[in-house]
Length: 364
Image (cartoon, rainbow, N blue to C red):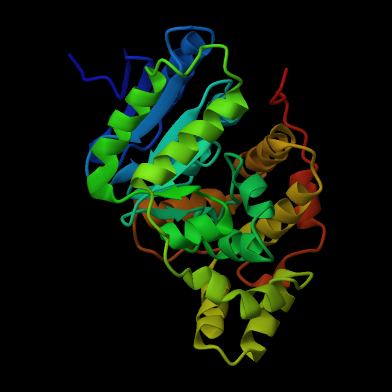
């Protein structure tokens, strides 16, 4: 019998979810998304479950992202409707986590990227460790950040959101705290103690079931910080804010590159090199999506915008398939973007992505 890719169990007031696909770094497929959704919906009104805890099996990380190879297969086979099913159910799960009425603790130990951010980034208590590596690397495959990533990026300080979204830069624990992707740092060798602490709090006599969700979250977060939390240390991202904020405030990707080239910092030049290697279309859409999300009222609206974008890519744009091919199928790391240059992207491209109307809406 095949082993379940989602382990869901209840112990002393804690609904414990474990992503159990370590051979694929817990990458999410549709079955895993459905199993997570079923468990969370079943526990939402269960008085025996007071706290949710999410972690990942294996030593490498929580979740490397969504199963983009299957996405590639769907698009190449001419079945964009299958792509739509996956994203509609994934985005509904992201919203369910963000709106969950009980404390939701996500342990983003190790690699947590893409779809993993969609799980951990919207939890009410987001824990990272010194081994954490967080990123929204979608532009590396000719795509744009999704799973509510544009909402998180839009609310990062200064222009860190544009920087992280466009470059796909990997954050350590300190960077994740500085950018607003995490709340607390716990040493990786204390994760077992964290599990015990969550169980202790969920089963405590002074944790009444009728406690408000916001108070329960505040109490548990303070308890974790007091007993297990450590200082995040200096953030490289925060230190780089002067040149990041100046360059990434530009109106277009082309102007961002020009501003980076004019900066004296070596890191700015490396960043310009990175941008010039990525999908020009993906970059233009990402910049518009992050800035568009700043004007939206809530996460659900951001997810709806992202859904329009993903279906636009899946039904009309070659760069997504080409990026996955180069990174994960042929693995030649030599994508042939169309158009190939940032200067060749038409001004109306980003607007057409954001305004795309999928045949099946995200929210019915």
